Length: 368
Image (cartoon, rainbow, N blue to C red; front, side, top):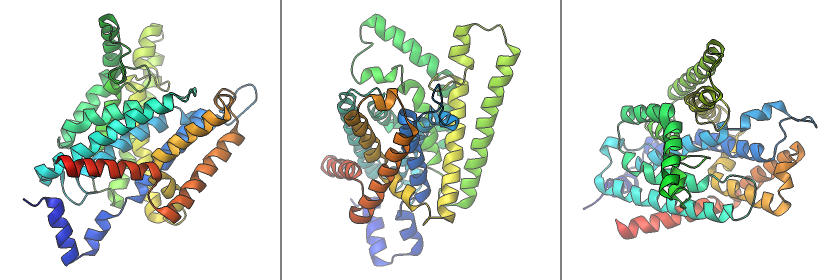
């Protein structure tokens, strides 16, 4: 029995159309957003946002927002894998193709988990997100065909209660003696707990259903994100002002917007900012594709650059993190972008991205 993918391939060979060809191209705006996410994490790890020696105060935006954006984009990517980059509506994806995509995502999850363990073994002060992200990939497998409304409803529930759920699960798991089990602990870990962060993945899965090549769609994402982010920030100010006598525990768990606090306010603001960045990136890439080509190249190999920057930190020494320098940050960020440009121009797909594609495609071919 031929799958939808086989029929699309034969149809394209017989009578290719501009629309079909356009659908199969990467969406440059998403690569711009991926580059911003990765370079933001580089800034969080190596940039100097201020202190006794001065610094760039604006680098405070590199804490919390970039990693959440990275997770939202992971959700978008999974939906695009299911829909052949928007060529087929989710509801019309054949069962065989859906099964194949689930195998591909599961294999990528396993590789990310393994890579996360390896990078954690480098001994850098950086909390590596890859193992937790791999667990989120696995949790997303049954969600790939959920309706957008269900995904956004689930994201709202986890945005409000995910932090509490992760803390509760951490307490229960510790009492049961499984609190620090490898992989499983990613569900409730102190950093990037999957039980809360699945909200970002689910938002991304829903965004991936939209026509991301459309200017009007980009504007809607941008506008919605701005409303959500500003609303969360203003709500935080208002609540903290009107509840001056709240306990420190309540503040830390529910009302602070500090990065990586996993409160409803912080997570809501992160989702809004992620949507703003994605919307702006889609618009900018459609208007100035040549000017933004370096970022497009960097975003197309975001995993490779993320791993590369951790290897550099391990090679240079932990002082690169504990004694940050904006000279180091700028040099490292520029070097990563230059590497991406040279690699893409000469060899195309990034090395780790090529490995993920080859391994997951081979597994899907064999097992489905």
